[in-house]
Length: 190
Image (cartoon, rainbow, N blue to C red; front, side, top):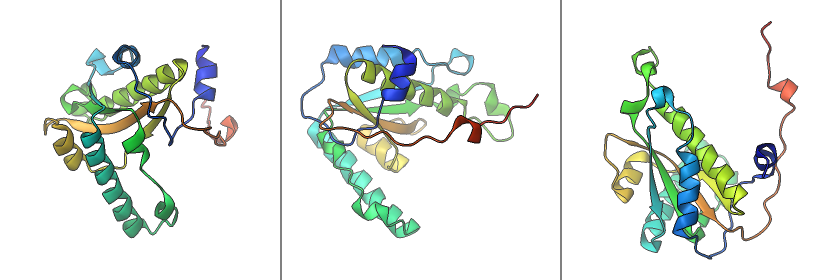
């Protein structure tokens, strides 16, 4: 599959079939993830693959708690109907964990080190594109408290759970969302 086609055709999925994903497929997707760029090639990512229903239930409960908190805090009415049950039905959830100690030279800058987060984001994008190329659907999910997710997944307190990526076969059509024109989002300095 052409990379430009994959980028434009990939969609976020919130409804998955229960069909399991083979370990060889998961490893192929994670192999794509580790080829992402990173500061000083420190490769600050780690991956936790969750298929166990009990753990997915804990993740769902944490996301539901955060959804309710977000509704109360923000007042955003759309959160009333936002469902996070796909966390229970996705056959695979990959937790992407970053190591702040592997951020690169930006750790010495005034604003601190965020390079490790950017590298993990690039790995997440590779996961999405690889999954799409293999005929799977995916979703990038971040509605969770980091301390709670560390506890649920047994993550070292010095490391940062950055995202959950849900993977599986799509249980329906995902609709294309509108993108703004590139001219609205680009400035050239000449």
